[in-house]
Amino acid sequence: MTLNDVTMNLPTYPMEALAKIRQDLVDAGTRVFDFGTGDPRIPTWAPIKQAMKDSIPEISQYPSINGSPELRKSIWGYCERRFSYQESDDLDLIPTNGSKEAVFHIALSLVGRAGGRKSILYPNPGYPVYKSSILFSGGTPVPINLDADDGFKIKPWDLPESVQADAAALWINYPHNPTGSTADEGYLKEIIAWCQKRDVILLSDDCYTDIYHSSWDNSGERPHHILKYGHKNILSFMSLSKRSGLTGYRSGFILGDRKLIGSIRKARANFGVGTPLPIQAAATVAWNDDEHVAERRKIFTERLDYCFERLQKMNMIQDRPQAGFYLWCPLREDDDDITFSLDLAKHGVITSPSQWLSEGIKGYVRLAMVPDQQDLKPAMDIMETFVTKRY
Ligand SMILES: Cc1ncc(COP(=O)(O)O)c(C=O)c1O
Image (cartoon, rainbow, N blue to C red):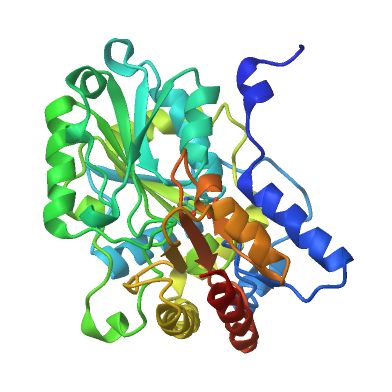
């Protein structure tokens, strides 16, 4: 063995496994309806592309880790419009190359903090990089199982005392991937109170915060954001991947406690994660505009409405999630989610089984609202035939 244990023992990244299933179907000439990976194919808003093209420099130089003044201004403008936040003695931000690297790298700065605490707590099911980043950093991953009966709320206070005492940080993610669960003000305040009592750094993965039911645009009701209720020891991870569909551009930011951001800025200068200038220029345009985001929300709302209604009739789901673009469908008792997904994939419909999106959570499949509107009916027809035969 020439590599370390963490690398040697990593499971296949779920999206790689899904890509293989997809390729096998395409090679076999099957028409594919891919609800697997959360990477919707909606054309990029033209001014974003133009800004990137227009800013390819004559002379290439290293970008600053802190972001260009234009990008920072644009992000602060968004924070003001969306959350009424301004830069202050308490609040600062730093751009990132999307959330994934930011989620990964933050663990390096947290494991061992405050007297050597090594544990980082995170939701299960949840985004797989919470766990892998902790492992690569030499920490102890502590998954907390989410329960449908609780609305999939993470409850660190239910852990044994010794586990709570070793916690360096806690991840939350509302709107949540994969369940679509959201958090209300009372719950977020409870989470902050627990973190403060335990001196735990709160990490909030907020990349779905702008993906919610499009009717909320007019009602003023939108997913609650953690920094409304406190700043100290709290960081929010934001991204353009879902908001503007810029998954391939790699752009986001971390917003929160000014002292923490200062330390993170020093650390990140070592990681090689300065964002290329043309991407910063594209991101500047994206954060400055809300209209293209409203258009995307409409598209996801229509897709979710249609698939939810069809799946509800199949008895595959009960409650429509109010945010995110996922449907988390419980299977009938003792049906295995991996077998279900693989059997369904043979008919061309790709879903993600819960065991691939979690540590040991069985009996669910996730559908990401990725296929185009015109593909939803044929896909749901296939699913209905499949489910009717199976159950
Ligand atoms: C919960 C969650 N966090 C983070 C990410 C990473 O997003 P980004 O493209 O910004 O790296 C994803 C991507 O699907 C996600 O679902």
